[in-house]
Image (spheres, rainbow, N blue to C red):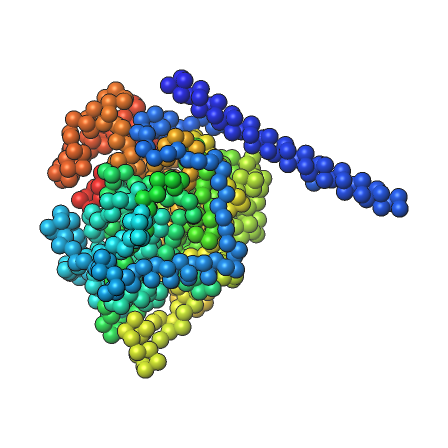
Amino acid sequence: AHERATTHAQARTARSAMRRSVRMACYALAAAALVVVLMAMADVGKSDDAAPRKLARQLKDITEIFPLRPTSSHRRESASTPEQDWGAHRRASMASYLAERAKCDSPDHPESRWRSVDTKAEGMQTFYNWSVPYRQNMEERPLAFETCEVEDAARESGWTFVRVGPFLGTGGYDWHDVRVNPVPRNERAKFITAKMFAPVTRDGRVLSYPPVHTHHAHMGLDGVHHWFDSHGDSICAEEQGGTACYLREEPEGYGLPLRESEHYELEFILNDVRKAGSPAMTFYMEASLRWSADASLTPVSRAHYERHDINRDFSTILLPMREDSVTWQSGQWLVPGQVIYSPKDQTPFFHSHRSFSKGMWAFAASPEELGLSLDLLERTPQSAVPEGSSAVAMDRDVCWVPRDGGMSAKEALMDRIGQSEAGMDALRCWLEPGESPDARTLDHVAGTDTSALYPEAWQQNWEDSWYDRVGQVYCNGPWEFEDGDSYTIVAVNGLDPRLDEDGGWDKPNLQHVGFKLAYETFADAPGPNLEVYSSFFDGYEAYGTKVPFIYSIPSSYVGALGTGVMPGTNWMRERGDFKQWYEDHYEDEGVVKNMQREAVLALRGPPFNQTNGFVKFGEDPFKSP
């Protein structure tokens, strides 16, 4: 352990020294240039370490070595298309996707045909509940699952197309709640390089919002829920690509690596948001992945950083509605690496409910270093919930509401950070809503009716309103980090005044603050795909109750727990086929709780109450361990 720590410290020192050398060279060049300019002017006159977390340290020690080659570069610049071409680039990518999918319906490609899957015979678990309102008047409905494989001539890459449905909607914001586990995968796939999750019509037209809201579509990987996803804010402004933004590609040369033991699980909710009683509309969910067998791709990992769990549906936080507020979540990186930045490929990405979102800023610093302190926080009162809403304010619904100095919430936030130890130099990525196409996070859509102007059901009875759009996350270059380095994601929230011009807005501010990214690891093996639900500070307590940090990590990644590398970790190995064992025992709460406790001890070490991070395993048969 000492040798490993020494080697890692030496590597970190070498990287820091290299960066310092580059900076000094740049300073020297700048100084030389300034001297030249001053000389020219003169001539004319004559004739500008936090200690790594224990979790990070132990996770690194037990990680199994990934069988593919290590990363090829410690600094890889992501090629970017000029901003004015991003929409064209995204539409071209979608056109390519649709052309490949068309082979599933073409007699010229008999090897690529849609296949109806007998889910029971293939051991797949499916679930489809319809309800309106949510979880009321529920109906269990049958579900069809179709798949089609399209491969290149060398069978080295291709698309696995999946279509689930059909769904029948008549508007009124109904809920189509679906889960499928596991989802078939191509046996030759070593990497995933793109995804497309979107509602489509019977003939494959990708539907916008309206008429269908993708509440969420998650493709999980061995227990990590947000491995790939789409939401209601996944569509771009039309100039930036519109529905083509449902398709997201990894930057060229990168891919999400797969292990043979890993499997996917799909869950989604779709809402028909047309006016209640609209003509019946049939639609489907398409959830497709592009794979590659090219072992020379650089492996990257997915990270989803979300605010702490509130014990509420969809893990939203209740915030003041007509007062702007500030929230943040913080944590530490588990491995050394860098965030991949490619704006044309929409990475990183920020998810929130856009009606209440007024900006996001990601910093390479802790909250304390940014001047964000415990005394700023206050609980959201029940009076913030509009009359008639069933939402209930909870102890963990906490935020900062700036009320002094005559500044807006954003101005107060920037003023405080500007005067902090880290300052704005720690800023790495941001999304600020505005009127330009890349900054629009809400678009006004005109209403429609059932006249001859709108002949198809999906075109009819749209509400005249504002609808979520994605907006563009920008970063100021590569974001490099060491294991144990801090990050803080800050957001300003409040009702967009365009939605409340008559003062009649009646929906509570139930918000997400989800920062999603891909990262490259500066180590021999890729870091884990993970979800982190973290709070304002490590050890934060909300009115006497400790708020846990939840780290969801794939069971396949922590497989080294079963190799006996660490004392007391043979519990997984002794149970043989872990996945089968888990699925046979998931209803036995005592067994599962004991398994969680032992996993926590193996990852963190005793005693249990010294830190509040823990590994979260699946809680139902639709989530793997």
